[in-house]
Image (tube, rainbow, N blue to C red):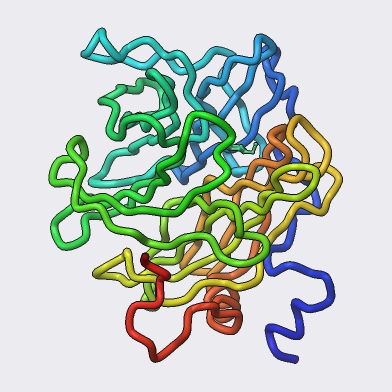
Length: 326
Ligand code: BMA
């Protein structure tokens, strides 16, 4: 049976963890919901930063720790960011964090409230003390993730320019920096496509480096008569020029079909923000927010993900370019 045939029986490539959700909406006293969160291996266990919408419906980021990546102890209070610049120090809102281990430190990017949604950058060494470095992209932008190393000497970030509402458009762009604070050399990476990714797309977890290219897991949105539907796909980007898309799934690898993905504060949402890849076993665990309510996990292997992305490729092979740049 080919990989494609294996996944035709209404089974997406990503297999849900049977114990989902791994973090319930009420895991800490103040929480209305805990979702779209980022976790990384740390020491003998794991650390993470969690989007917690509290019962005032503030959107804030809390730190947490876990021995096994499944059972989490999340701080009851949000992170108190240290910030040298009083102008930006006040946290109006902060959500949808990603954590990138880069140059030996843990960098956090998130959607930051400052005269509209923009991109905040912070750093921590221990997940106890966090420094808010600066706003690195101005409004309107609410989705960004850093690559885990410099490419050709420059830091690289994927992000999605947007508007101030529930943006009904969105393509993935890439920007580059010499110092993590000043960003330029902007490149178009990829735009919307048919079906599940027809309204907008946005980068998910930190891209993972493989011999085939950077594996990018991303979310794609379609507009139904009942609102947005958020599914998950994958792409493989060129190692040296990561704005070049080598392969990209025509078909989703996960879509909201389970009760906990379809019923919640925002129905029909699967929103990946982190991935744990174990090179020794090839296992890939994707952490995603479900229905803007709770946090879940789904798994595959990197070899299956790459084979599936190639087998379902929507990029014409043999053609130059092919990322749909306009
Ligand atoms: C996006 C963000 C995400 C959320 C998604 C679905 O615009 O706000 O945090 O998961 O919408 O509501």
